[in-house]
Amino acid sequence: SFFFSFLVSFSVQQNKNTQFYYSLILFDGHHRRPSTMTSLYTNRVAFSLVLIFTALSPNAALEVIGSGYGRTGTDTLREALNELGYKTYHMKEIVEGRLGSDAMLWHAQMENDCSDVEALRDLFERGGWTAALDFPTVMCYESLMIAFPQAKIIHTERKSSEQWWNSASNSIMIIASLFPFNVLHAVIPFLKIRKAMLNSMWSKVLGGKNITISDDDFPLGYKEEFIAAYEANNARVRKVVPRKRLLIQDHSKGWTDLCKFLGKEVPEIPYPYSNKRRDFYRFAYKMAFKFIFGAVTAFVICIFLMYKLLQLFTKNNKIKDL
Image (tube, rainbow, N blue to C red; front, side):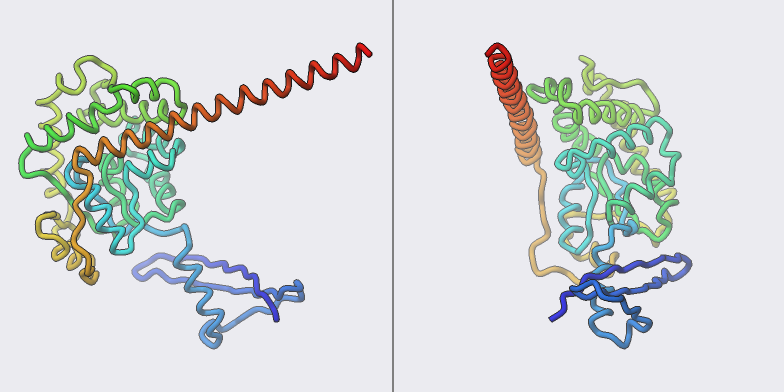
């Protein structure tokens, strides 16, 4: 029997309706002369393979953009969107994946007021992300609306500005200054990049003010400014996003409004409720342990290799002496 390996190549032309043009070349297990399939619709196997490759293709486009600040239920929304079949980009993905290149890109975007739309488009298409929300994405949601004009906008917010401040100032704003995170951000290369990203991100939130998360007065010294920025973002979303393109997601209503807005069937499982403050710290310390374990492991391996090299060097010298 033949085992097929195949190459699917396609070009995408995006206008009112995205069209895909495929060519499929099949090779048998003995690498005989290939045969070109000119009609996908007459060959069930070839058509199935194209569908699989289309689904797995990393060049996806954002379908959902989140415009709400972190600590407004963005992780709950992330879990909900993932359950509905989206691949969702969130700050957690940057940290868990140690995406240093992403952190550098976001740092540059914060510095340049999200002006590099092509870089943003490439980031999400290259990663195959179909939804994006939370910090730092939210700081560029208007540029992403331009990059992905068909995407829908989902906005999340707390019941009051004070409630948002109490949550954010005791979690995402302060975590990097607590032990052991402050030490890790000073020595782990990825976290040093992330710290630079956070500095530029919080600076952009406050309208370009030079912010450093290690400052003694951060974040408490900027409470009024942060609350004003949060409220301004909520107001601007309602102003700049077309009504038909916007959903203000109320998590207390569960799946109903979200699924209707996205044209999805309501899942049979309960609507998620994640990332309470204790969940946030549990995740943070879990990641800290992973970073520490990785650093210690790397150190031990280096010491072991140096010991082996020293042994080899000593052995060679003894042979020369003989």
